Length: 165
Length: 200
Image (cartoon, rainbow over all chains, first blue to last red; front, side):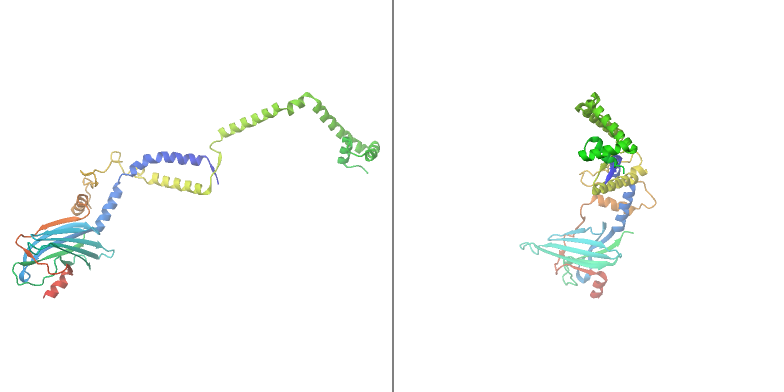
């Protein structure tokens, strides 16, 4: 194919001039920032966590509440530190296209039952599809329906995940 | 019957056999038309002979003359090349030509739709680098952008959270010191409604 010499010359000139413009495009424009914010807003999730200690007759002996913001696919780690026990719960919500939420919870427990006993480690992953705002309860140390012992407690983490409106 | 002109030309040049030469000679003596053709060929032959014997023949056919002609041709070619650079034809393979056209299209698109050319950036904003955090690892999200009707505290909080946090959000809770936690099985994840229904 035969080309006029004018075109390669024009191409070289454009190649020389283009970096002058591209240094401005490397910065984030306000339009791109708006798009990024809109994307984050669409993927943003508000997670409410109620941590409770439940005693005899399901008495709520202690509780605390926390509210965190995350985005779909980014986990929230909750660490509960006791005297002879450490519980680490990782809450990982995924926002589906239809608006439903797929919740993955990983529980890790380090426990020492007595002063002379070895420290034990348990780990489990559970998942549950939920509706936005639906309450789920994560029992990192297992479910204890009831106990006769006044000093024995179980941990409940009540979790609610909602898209950020 | 008159002879062909080529035969008369051969007669003039003395290229025919003696018997044929004689026959033609007798015919020419009696034919005005053939005699006129013979005279024409004869005059041309004499002219060539005269030129070949003159000094100008050496000038035209000499090595100097050839060299001068080549020099003139080269000079003329160079001049034409210099004058018509923009119109010079170059041979380009078809794939390369397609690539060149695509590159020109991309460059033109970049130039036309760049924020600089569309005037989105003001002169003091263009090319301004994003501010970095103290550890210079995570770029902080600018929070001093002008507030609009749509800007909300939640979004600002989200941006602040994203810029402040690492891979995961950490919540640390200290349990009451007197509490005795019993490990009664593996972790469970239940719907609150299902759990409360089963407890009743």
